[in-house]
Image (spheres, rainbow, N blue to C red):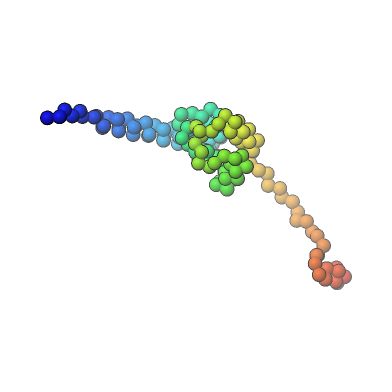
Length: 133
């Protein structure tokens, strides 16, 4: 009769679930803190806590107030970083670049409210329109 060894899979599975839940809770807390402004996304990129190592850069950026998918995509394209790149896999150069860019644009972009420019009519017959006006 061959000797078989039983592998205790249940405790390992439970430890993995506990670890996954702990990471999930830490990420949720980090997202909340970023959303209210207690922690900046630039700090998370530079320090890269354990809970954020496998978090994608896009998820981090989207957790900020006033950051939607379009703004996030344009920001990452401009800096040459993939949206699905994990924060833990960023190079030191990428970390510094993204952090510097984020610190430069943390304020909401100012919307300029200017009076519309009133120009002269253009195109064929523009002279006639001015003469009859």
